[in-house]
Structures are given as structure tokens and as C-alpha cells.
Length: 267
Image (cartoon, rainbow, N blue to C red; front, side):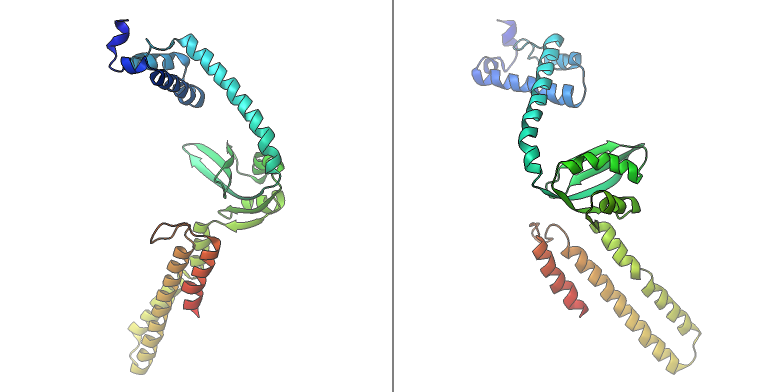
């Protein structure tokens, strides 16, 4: 008993609440270190022993292994039970999906998710990013839900084909690439024309022609400013959260903001 009392929390560990906390500590240590991070039972045992709680719980390597095996069985059982409930319900859901190809160190990772809930449907490391690879990655997901209404991506040819040919859905570009494409149409046009006029003005000695060139330059400068303001207003309008108070913005809100700040300005 004296050895058990050396820990500053020993009086707490002897209570019902203290024992419950220790049980939670063991379960969480095994779940996060053992099951999720693939850390061995020996290391988990050493961790609990170093914390000084080994005198109050069975923290041996064998105990950690047995508990982890029991947890694995319960997790699998829970998954089976939930699938029986959720899969029939999923058949009534229409999905608005997002697909992306991201890189982590040397790995190419394909990510496929439901944008409404933020749930990752599929995440796989693949060597290639071809349509056939994407198709094999998401094909099983297509059987779970009623339909895929849309797919949002960076607009690559492969992901567009995935949307139309595999998911049979409408494709949209993501916000970043949509604005990038929009700005790309006129990105260099104003600057190129302004520089061309300035070059002519530097060589012109005719005052009448110079006045006309300056007038045209100011028109272009004004158009460039208006173009940038429109892009800024579009960017702010389609942002998922309001800039001033961080409140969520609905589709109806976006439509109204676009009309009031963008369409009316152009008109």
C-alpha cells in the first residue's frame, strides 16, 4: 500500500471517478497509439508505467495486447452494426462530391469526398492519376448512394471525364481555379494595350494625336481598375463565410450578393 501512495494522485485513483479516468486513459492510449498509429503494446505499457499509473492498472505488455484485441473486435462489430443502419439510408442521399490529387512527400494521394458533410469517402495512395485509376478508386462509392449530382475539382481532363463518364454528374471547377480562369481571360490584355499606347505616345510629336492616345489610355486604365474591382467583389461574394462577421453564407445569399455587387456594377 505504501508503494501505491507515492503518486501525488493516489488518493484520486482509489476513488470510483479515479478508476474510471484510469480506464479511459488506457483505452485512449491503446486507441491512438496502438490502433491508429500502430505503436507496439510494449511501448504503450512503458508509457503507462512511466506515468506512474502501473500500480493502479494492469499495464503489462500482455494486458495491452489483450485489450487492443478486444477493442479491434468491438470496433469491427460497431462498423457492422452501423453499416446495417446507414447503408439503406445512404441509398436516399444525393452526393455533391469533390475530387483532388494532392502530394505528400513522394506519395501521390487521391482524395474523394462529400462536400456537404466533409466526409472523406476515399483516400488512396496511387502511382498514377489516370481515369482508370480514379474509376477503380471511386467505383465502390458509387454503389452506396442514390446519385452523384455534381463533382467539383481543379478542372483537369481526367477529373472532368470522371464526372461525366463515371459519376454521370455535372462538373464544376473549384473556387480557386474558377476565379483563375475568369481572370486569365483579361489578365494581360489591359497591361499590354496600355504599354502599346505608352510606346506610341513616346514617339508621337503630334499634339492632337497625343491627346487622343492619352484619352484612350485613361479609358483602358479605368477599365483595368473596374475589372480588378469586379474580380475582387466576385471573390468576396462567393466566399463561404462573410468577411465582416464570419457568418456562413448560403447559395441564395451568394446569388443576391453577386447581383448587387457585381452585375449591377457592370451594368
